[in-house]
Amino acid sequence: MLPLSRWLRSVGVFLLPAPCWVPRERWLGSLRRPSLVHGCPVLGAWHSARCWCQAWTEEPRAFYSSLRMNGDQKLDVYAQERQDFIQHFSQIVRVLTEEDIGHPETGDAIARLKEVLEYNAIGGKYHRGLTVLVAFRELVEPRKQDADSLQRALTVGWCVELLQAFFVVSDDIMDSSLTRRGQICWYQKPGIGLDAINDAFLLEACVYRLLKFYCREQPYYMNLIELFLQSSYQTEIGQTLDLITAPQGNVDLGRFTEKRYKSIVKYKTAFYSFYLPVAAAMYMAGIDGEKEHANAKKILLEMGEFFQIQDDYLDLFGDPSVTGKIGTDIQDNKCSWLVVQCLQRASPEQRQILQENYGQKEAEKVARVKALYEEMNLRAVFTQYEEHSYSRIMGLIEQYAAPLPPAIFLGLANKIYKRKK
Image (cartoon, rainbow, N blue to C red; front, side):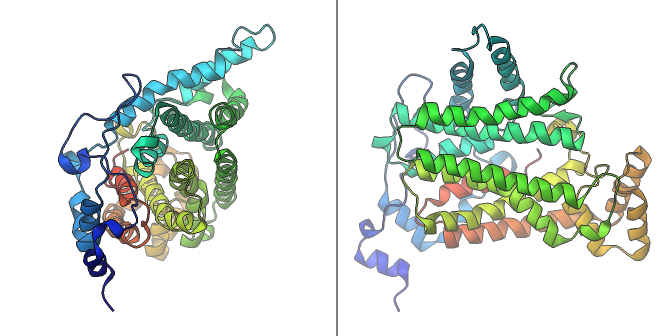
């Protein structure tokens, strides 16, 4: 049987289903980047079926290798989108607060909401929210990327960020965390305390207010509502698994299995951090087929696991001045990747050390666990895992990305590969 790539070339590249609109600077060198900053964007995008076919059908592995970028060589394709995204936040705040902030009955509550938004929604990396915008640009042909549709994409991206803020405000309370994004956690601020629980509810409610305000008349509105509701439910199931696996004051190392860890990560992190933003962009682009979403999910859930394992590693071995938070997984008795790896390799004596010191608040006991991890060379174990997992993700992209543009997935992979925060 004639290989697909050869058959495609034999019949002409323009018979290939056009999977994406490729921004021309990706292939021709940098031109003026489409921007929302100066009014309505002029999107200089160029659909190159020939270039796409050559890249995708002739040398797919070389294609991926050429896009794998490390350290200072990483190309930040999010730079302009990030600027547009951050500038859109002021509009988000206005929509959510401006009309009612002077209301005689609820004005004080709306003023509190504004404060909650401005403290908890900004200051992060914005990867989740930016992914909506970047994926939307890739999936939708340029003539349909008008100012209104891009405003909606920016807003849905901020809905993902507000959902993230809802989760982290709540999670910080449950984990007794101290810092987040380089500042003290919201609930730790004087005068806030457990009132932060209600503030988290406000952040979640804002997601659905924004979706209604911007997307109510769009054909994908209900798909987005169901997607956000399902993502919230899955994340909360994951948080429940996390909490019941490691109850405070009850250290049971037998619960820290790789199977349980993968379940926690899949539900608590991977769905909302990776599948949600890409799926939202897909729905906005009119892509609602089960197969396309299932294939995207195979790639994105694997990325989510990779991301959470990095997070667990950085919780202990990362630089707090870079990560913006002080890790507490050891003292919080968390089912983290590091403790799972430690248990898989531990001698009876090492397991006893872990049993005596894990899940304890005392600084010397936390230090003893960290010393044990160093003794077992878990830094090297992580480095080996990171390389293996990255290669696996590249293989999944090659296998499952089509008909979606692999640039969506490659951009995400290169954003998280070798990250330090």
